[in-house]
Image 1 (spheres, rainbow, N blue to C red):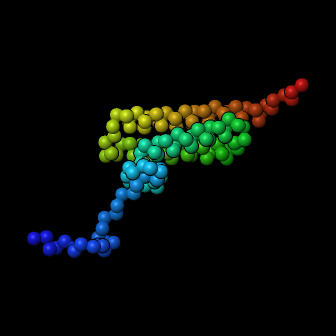
Image 2 (cartoon, rainbow, N blue to C red):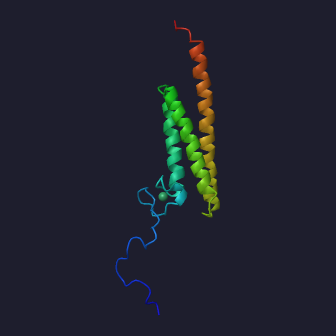
Length: 136
Ligand SMILES: [Zn+2]
């Protein structure tokens, strides 16, 4: 007999195992892997959000309004998201080949972001040392 089981109805909270959170992207019912708990996204939507954020950051850098502090913010963002992505992708999630491609594509985006940032930083630094001549 299974009389040891609690009767039907709400169980005490302490006894219930925490339910995995559902992805925060509208319409997505996938669960959030523990490695992405603080991001509140499933792996797919995490990669999409990283790529979207990278595109936004790049647009701001291209616009020429980004400060050195913003560059530092972008650098630490790229590092942090790379680590989070690596932890999730190498966990026991058993990703499909398509998902593995998606993860690699996001890594590429993050690596290119860093590279681009370094190029722009060097250009900005060079211009600060040797200002461009006034036009006309
Ligand atoms: Zn999702």
